[in-house]
Length: 193
Image 1 (spheres, rainbow, N blue to C red):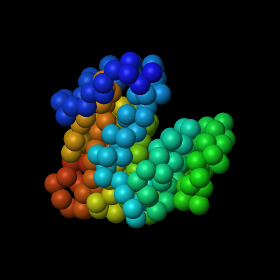
Image 2 (image 1 turned 30 degrees about the vertical axis):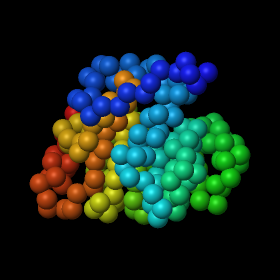
Image 3 (image 1 turned 180 degrees about the vertical axis):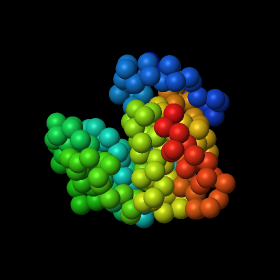
């Protein structure tokens, strides 16, 4: 019942602690919370026409599909290592009517070419985010937007950190090599938390 649903809370306050975030990961969001998180992630990244969105750890495919349906992205790619999740995503895609702009790959994200992405979305554990960071810095063009649900990138501070209905969302932009932000990102990548 739409009337009974509690209001969505989005704040730019300090996100919750890692322990709280891990509890969030262990206790998945409701469907309403997932929809709210998805919208917040796409809005903070300013996703729009012309964007090429890569969703790493894409699960059921809801992010690339919604980005194509609601935000008109040029192309979306979901990558997941779990073949069952790719089957679910492809089933959802067949019903969504955006199959000409979205595809899902059963692949290892560390071995996938991400270089044409303008937006990357993540829902990976913290150690995977940090392991992925050198690849993101190497392959993505400066200005590429990164959004992570739940987990940060260690000491590389996000440009924005949102608390969306009690769940964390982090946003970064790939910096130009040689800048202070790039050096901070490289230091975080080397630290491995």
